[in-house]
Each structure stands twice: as structure tokens, then as C-alpha cells.
Length: 221
Length: 185
Image (cartoon, rainbow over all chains, first blue to last red; front, side):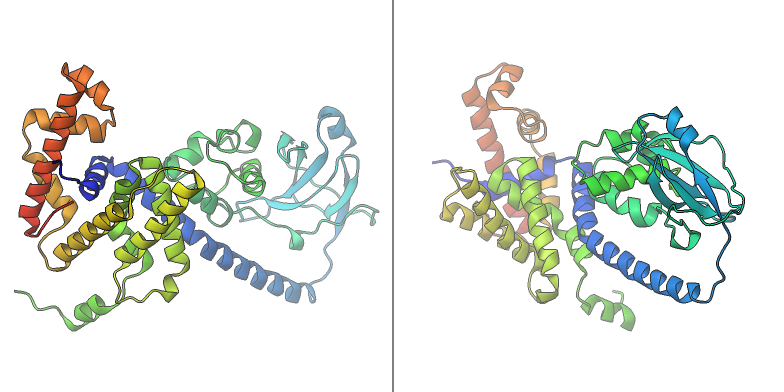
């Protein structure tokens, strides 16, 4: 009569597995267990930052603003539905996202600050990025939204992108290779990191990756 | 003999963190899941789901208990759910209990310093004859069917099956000898 070796069979199967497959398995499990903590910490940090910003703004003088409109760019990029307005701050690498306004609208932005415009399609990805920064002169208030630097946001690699890569990509890909070979800065729709992921990403995660790439993919390891 | 310093001794008494336990136990947990489902992808899914549940409930876990046995219990539950949801034939209770008993025995061997089951099996594998080792590699490492192996080795499927069974018998006896314990499944 044949002896049964079910447990031994499992051990033999595990012994035959490639060590990389085991390492990837551990990576996936730990990434999924770390993520909620990272998100919670990020939320706490964001809340603290918002509180501090609110406190500071109560005493800060109003910064001068200027008017910006996009009729010329709207003609250049007919598929664009919104204009994304980015600002460069001195001594700070990631671009600040001031906000997005309808392509046929206008906005008030900080005067004399380096502003970068990006026309955005329906999918939320950039269709066109201005070749250079522009500055607007101080002008009287206009009906458009007021996009102030103090309410701007950035997309940080460690905070906003790495947790997504840890969860969906690091199991099979080396992160450092991925963020260089599969990313074309300022061109999310031509970056395979955004367009060719083989593990399903949520819409929010894909948008976050796309935004990080469209804002220049700063902070890559 | 080296006497551990007080901080080292104190550290050894500290409960291990979740990450450390996962790194330490994941291969045995995968081996357990593989014994149940015999498919790498499904075994990984079951073990991963079980570890995520274990992480969620880790605060409630009594550090004096055996982490591996706890997670194996969750894998077992996940396996039953998996077969139920797909209307698959499952292993009998007796077969699952035999797998559990074997893993408990391997746990005991490790605790008593008689050796690690995977490390011992690797050494047993190195002692196999060339033909048997080749058949074993084609089946477990390359995941080929018996018919495929038979065609490749220019022999019959029955010979391949017998060779595999003999290899498992030899490995089981070798493991028993190396771990110095009763080995039946």
C-alpha cells in the first residue's frame, strides 16, 4: 500500500519554488499590511499641516494676484477640458498644484510667480505642457477662482506614490528600475507605469500616479 | 559557551513583531497551503489572505502561542471557503488533520533544536540518485505533468509515478532520520 505524503508534498513544492517568488510574496504581504498605517500617518500629518496653515493664514498679509486666461492654449489643444495651473516655488523641487479650471475659464494666480500651464484631457492626464514658465502681472480681482499658493498641494513620491507601487508593483518589479524605465516625466499618457499596469489599480490610484508623472515625477529613488 | 548580556537576554524574551514572524514563517505557511491546494498561485492567495487577517487581529494574538499554528488555522479556514465557493472536491478531514499533525511535529523538531524541516529536506534532496532527482525536479520545480515527464525521459507514465512515489518515500525516511522524529505523512 502506498504511503501518503501530503505534508511532505507541500514542503517539496515550497522547496522547489524560486527564492525570488518567496521574497516577492513577503514583499506583497508586508506592503499590504503597512499601507493603512502609512495612510493614517499621512492623514494625521495632513490634518496637522492644514491646522498650521489655517493658523498662519489668519495673520499673513494678502498676496498680490494677477489674472490668467487660456483662450490661446484652448485653440492649440482642442481635446483639453481643463487647464492645470502649477507653480514653482524657490528652493523647492516638486511643483505646487494650484488647481484646475475649465479650459474656457480664467483664474487669479499669485502675481510675479513662475506659473506652468498644463492642458488636461477628460481622463485627467496632461495633453500639453507649456514649454516654459510664465509670470502674470498684478491686476484687479476678476470673477474666476482665486488659486493661492497657500492652498496648493504637491504630489510626493514617498507619501503618495511609493505606497501604490509597494502594493501593486514591487512584487514583480524593482522599484528603482520601474520609476525610471516606465516613466516619462510630464507625460503620464506615454508612461507605461500609468498605462500598462498588469495588476488592477483603482481609478484613484491610477490618477495619483498620472498626476505625479505629469507634475514631473520628482523624488524618484 | 557565550553568556548573553542582559540587554540581549531581555531582547530574546520580547515578543516578535508581525514582520519578523512573517519573514521567519512564510515558507512553512506556503508549504502548508501548497499541501492543501498543490497550486502556487492559489497557495499564495490563501497564505496572503490568512496573513492579512492575522495582521488585522495581531493585537489580540497571545505572543506565547505559536504564530505558525495560528496562521495555519486561518489558511485551513480559507481553503475550506475556497473549495466551497468553487464547488471543488476538498481533502477529507482526516487528510487535513494528518497535514496539521505533521506540521506540528516539524514545529516541535524546530523548538527542540532537532532541525528545520525545509533545511533538512534540502539536504535529503542532495542525497538522491540522479534519475530520481531529475524526475523530482521536472515534477516539482518545472511543474510538468507525469505524461510530459514520461515523454521527456522516454519511459511510461506508470514508471514516472512509481519513481515519484519512491522519491517521496525516500525523502520522508530521510527527513525522519534527520529530524529524529516519527514521520508518517
